[in-house]
Amino acid sequence: MRLYVLSGGLVHLPDMNHLTPDRNVGNPVTIPILMFVIDHPKGLVVFDTGVDTDTVSDPIVDTSPDLRIDRQMQRLGYEPGDVKYVILSHLHLDHAGCMHLFPDATFVVRRQELRAAWWPDAWERGYDFDSLLKTRHLKYLQPPSDEAFDVFEDGSLLCIDTKGHTEGHQSLIVDLPQSRRIVLVGDAAQVADNLTYSVPPGMSWSSQFAIQSMEKVRHLQAEGALAILGHEPTALDTLRFAPDCYE
Image 1 (cartoon, rainbow, N blue to C red):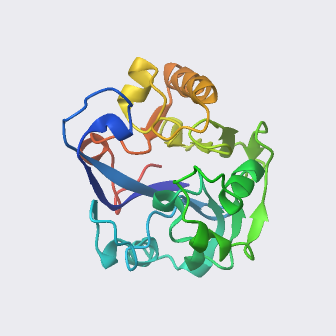
Image 2: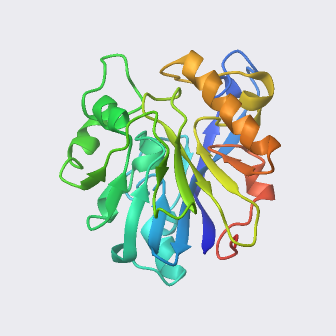
Image 3: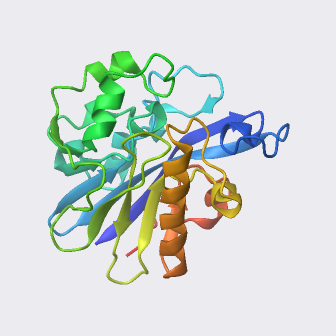
């Protein structure tokens, strides 16, 4: 089993206030957009699909067409049609922007996340409602919010409930045969300061649940897991990016 980390581009923010409210105001920061491919003996898996580099127009997003997830996969020798499961931490645009590239896959998304994205509250600004409506025809597995979901029923890929940032947020524990366990945290903790100072991520649906989810991530770290956070700036210097991998 191999885990590849892909960069979908960078986001240039005026400060960290969007990620850690009321902290580091006025200090510009550049954060990564992360995507993951897992080559498992029972099937190919994608965790988060990043932005659609061909259509994204936000001026703070720094990306290019060659960074779109399917093109990076092809350079590794994989095709989008090879993917058995696409697991999404949540359905915000920078994590689910390329769902349409995997029409034959089964999508693992929490039921509450689908409901929140397809029928968002009026105040919700994290979802691209028009784009997500076009994904309702895809095939979904919908674990309930408080259930741990074992993807291949062998303990190697375990989706865990980490709601808070969004109503149906989930993280993925990857139990690799040679490396230590790796937790793909998504935006349950976007940057290290969220964990260090118990500051809920920006745009949190529930600060209470966000704190509980971060406690879960900290416990996994204490037990030896490597936690890859959703947008930690130091990830650009510390992670192994494709074509290198974790095994």
